[in-house]
Length: 251
Image 1 (cartoon, rainbow, N blue to C red):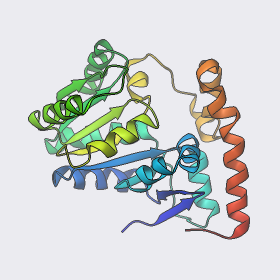
Image 2: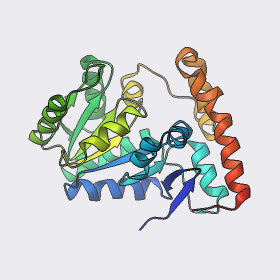
Image 3: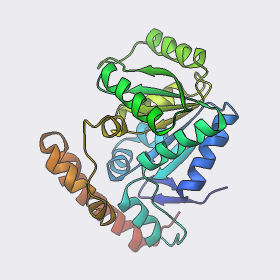
């Protein structure tokens, strides 16, 4: 069993890219209906503010520390083996592993069908043997129970082993939790990964990522959409985490 760090009210696995990808592969090969959350400060504060969402994230089968502040928090809590596992890196590794182990990958999300077509092309360019039999860009509305059932049936019919879900936090985590037990695969919430892969959005420079300032790059890129997430939630995270740290609570 991997160690788990409690950061404010969110439980995050202490892991590495190799361990996380290995765990997802184990779920996939077992056809275990499961879901993996890719955690950052935004998710942590959503968990803190919403008890239902707290149960969704803390009920996940695996939670990786995607955000650098989450990784730093684990280290400060005494988990010296903790490593940052960026969602994009995990997705890339899993696509390479899926091609090697003959596992099917599915894509759910994206702004449009054309975006998914580009994502599919880029993933298969990097991994020529990768099979992607399912790709669906859902409508921007609340799905009915019938629509949810039809999507699950389509995923299962395509024999998907790993389903990447990119519809943003907290929507994607709620969707995955609702589909657990319905789909015969492991689901991984990857946020804006489809936009990055397709070239619709750009990654922050590596040095900004290393300093934990990727949020600043994204804020400058999309101030109207992201100002509240970063200018309000980041200070709140620091306040409540320092409070946890001073209390001595580690797990």
